[in-house]
Amino acid sequence: MGRAKKVVLAYSGGVDTSVCIPYLIKEYGVEEVVTFAADLGQGDELAPIQKKAIEAGATRSLVGDLIQPFIEKFAFPAIRANALYEGRYPLSTALARPLIASRLVEIAREVDADAVAHGCTGKGNDQVRFDVAIGALAPDLKVLTPAREWGMSREETIAYGERFGIPAPVSKKAPYSIDLNLLGRSVEAGSLEDPFLPPPEEVFEMTSSIDNAPNTPQDIEISFEDGNPVAIDGERLDPVTLIRKANFLAGHHGFGRLDIIENRVVGIKSREIYETPGLLLLIRAHQELESLTLSADVLRLKNQLEREWADLVYQGFWFSPLKDALDGFFEPTQNQVNGCVRIRLHKGNAIILGRNSNTNSLYMPTMATYSSDDIFDHQSAEGFIYIWGLPSRIWAAVKKE
Ligand code: ARG
Image 1 (tube, rainbow, N blue to C red):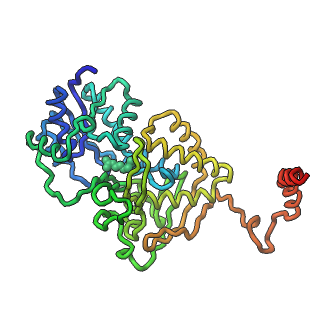
Image 2: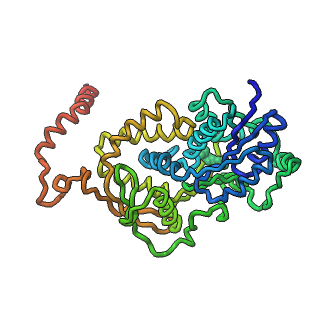
């Protein structure tokens, strides 16, 4: 592999990605490092991050607000797909990676770089997602991964940074590894590495504890159009505002915490603490509306394909023919998903109270009712069951002989 001259580095402002800058220059012989920091609603100030990159030796330091595409093009499709990895994790971190990767590739083209770089370690999922996405979008670009190769401990990394004027982290307080964006937080390391120990309350920021959640329940209504959430309590909201509001409401009532053992792509089981209040709430509501508006057979197959979709996104295949094909299956189903869902938020719970669709409900009261309005033909059931159960009776008869 020839040397890269100009590299676009995915930059967070943290010690690891900061150390990547001098490391790329000194150890990889890179001439120019251009950093890119994405705003995904994590709440960091971008101007100080920009300054930090220059101080660490970057020639240019770019920032970009990706919040809107993140929600519209990544979070909303995940809601339509009811995407829950291993049935539980709503992919809050995983969904951000292909977006960052695609922006890195665009910037590399704009500034005429011959490589991109990221600061992921060698044991996580994020390296897989970056490398696979970049490979799919720009197979000609080199991907440099200093943190995967340098083999430095945390202390050594900090010491290396200090040689190049990168300040050691001020607060040593939290021993956690945290990933954060508008969809949620992922917390690992420290005492969380013992999967039997309960997570300390200090790891949570977006959600109330059950104790601190209000005693009074709050009933809300979430409306959907074509499978996308569009309003809360009748108030139409743009996608970003809607996610913020869902985060606030669910988080306030202590809904949206996960404590799971997760199977990483690289074969490791890890203990993960997540807070994804809004996303989990919206998926729950969306599933509920689908149960009213999709036919039984479509629902059944969609449920199976949802699992595949979540696996693909988790494993780094956002840009892939199978993902496109699954989206192609989901799309027409979502034209049916119009209506609203009523949910009670209370003490860590999101309890479904009701669902309604004026245009697409397949629930037929005259079929379902036990009253005299019933139009279901009870007599027809006999013939249906005669044929439906025929294989069972034949099997039993033959077994007896
Ligand atoms: N395990 C989660 C995932 O794979 C979260 C990863 C968190 N990333 C991080 N750099 N701390 O999506």
